[in-house]
Amino acid sequence: MVQTKKRFGRGASCCKRCGQKQSLVRKYDIYLCRHCFREIAPKMGFNKYS
Image (cartoon, rainbow, N blue to C red; front, side, top):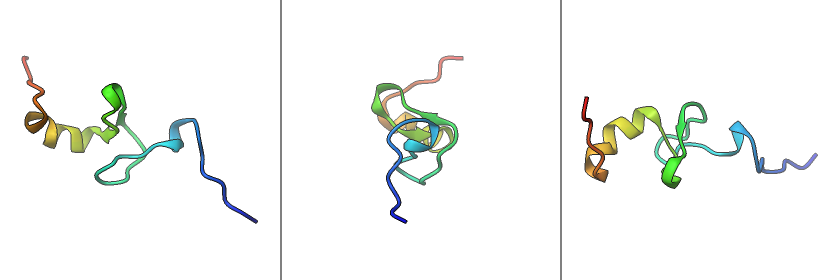
């Protein structure tokens, strides 16, 4: 049986940094999970205001 790559849905994309499939930030084509995003966000120019 040949495995095909999933093209759509929640399991289709994963975090670029750690490979996790849950809690992805896909806005602006970032594709990072929320844990990696919180670590990298200041370097990317995102600021926390509250």
